[in-house]
Image 1 (spheres, rainbow, N blue to C red):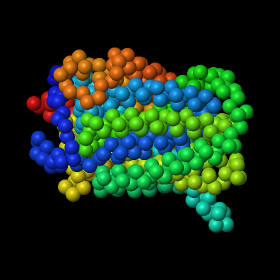
Image 2: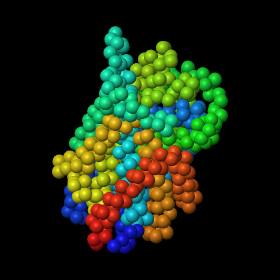
Image 3: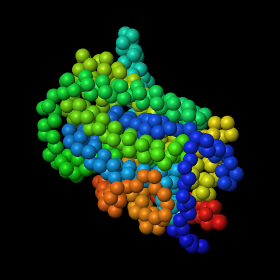
Image 4: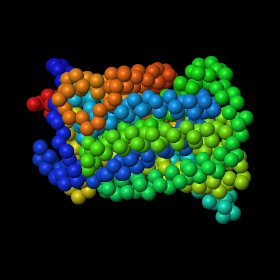
Length: 494
C-alpha cells in the first residue's frame, strides 16, 4: 500500500508573473488567488508579523526566566539562525512563487511524506502563533482599558473571570486561575478573521497602517526609555546558572529558542507568494528586508527594557508596560506603548491567520487536505473556508490555553520548518540545477548547513513536555496522512 512515500511534486520553471496575470482559471479550471501585493506590501507584512510578540511579550518572559540582560545575545543568536533560513526561503520563494511556504518547497525536494510532516508542523506554528499573540494582545488591551478608566477618574477593573485562560503553567505544573476564558483574545481573533475573509488587499492595507503606528511607538520607547536606563540592571550581564536552563549560557540558548518565536514573520511572507505582483523580485525584498529591520529593533529594545527594570520583574504578559509603570514621568509613554502593542499584536494575528489559511489552501489543492479548504471566494478571491476554520480553532485555543505552553510549541514548529527548507535548497540545487533562480543563496553549502544545524540545535534546548506534545501532534498528523491524504493525493493519482 505505502509505495513512493517520498515521491516529489514536479517543479516547472516559473515564468515571470505580474499584476496582469489572470486571477481566474488555474490549469485545473479552479478559481485562483489574486496578485495584488507589491514589494512594499510584502516588506510590511514581514514587519507586521515579526514586530509584535517578540518585543511586547516574549522578551520579558525570556529575560526573567532564562537569560537575564543577556536576552540581547539570545536575539542575536536567533537572528543569525533566521538569517541563514531567510536566505534559503528567499531562493525558494523567488523560484516557486506559490502559497504553501515550507510545505510547498519540501514537496518539491524531499517528497510527499516529509512535506506532510512540514505542513503539519506549520499548522502547529501558525495556529498556535495566532493564539499565543492573542493572549498577549488581551493583556495589553485590558491594561489599556484600565489606564483609560484611571485617567477618567474611575477605578474600573476588567472582570477577572474573562481576563485569562482557566489554567496557568509555571515550573512544570498546571494550576487553575479561577477564570472562565480569555474574552478579549476571542474577540480579536474573530475580528481579524473577518478582515482576512473579505480580502488580501484590505488586509495588507490595514496591516500597513498598523505597522506605521507600532514602529513609531517602538522608536519612542527607544528614544525616551533609554534616558532612564540604569546600567546596574545589566550586571551581571549573564546571571549565574541556577540549574537546568535557568540563566548562564544554557539559559541564553534556551531564551534564543523562545525568542525565535518572534521571527516567524518572514515565513509568513512566503505564504503570500501566489498573491505577489512580481514574486521573483519582491519576495527576497520582503523576506530579507523585514528580517534585518526587525532584528536591529529587537536587540535595541531588549537592551532598553532590561535597563529600565531588573530582569526578574519582567516575567509578565505585558513586560514593556510593566517596565514603564516604574517611572511615573513615563506614564504617557506607557499609554502609547499599550496602544502600540494592541495595534502591533493585531497585525501579527492578521499575518498569521493569512499564512495558515494559505497553507491549508495549498495542501488542499494537492489533495492532502479536504477539498473545501481549497475553495476561493468568488468575490473576495480569498481562501474563505480555510480562513473560517483557522479562525475558529485559533480563538478556541486562545480562550483556554496559557501563554507559556503555546509559545514554545510555536517555536518548535518554526525551527523544524526552517531546518527543512535549508536542506531542501541544497537538494534542489543537485536535482534541478536547470531551474531559473532569480535569487541564489550565496555560499549555499555553508549557509544551508549552518542554517539547518543552528535551527535543530535550538530545538534541542526545548523542555521535555514540548517534545511530548510535538510527538503527540506528529502522531495525530501521520494518522490523518495515512488514513486520508495518502489516498487522496493528486500527485499519487496522476
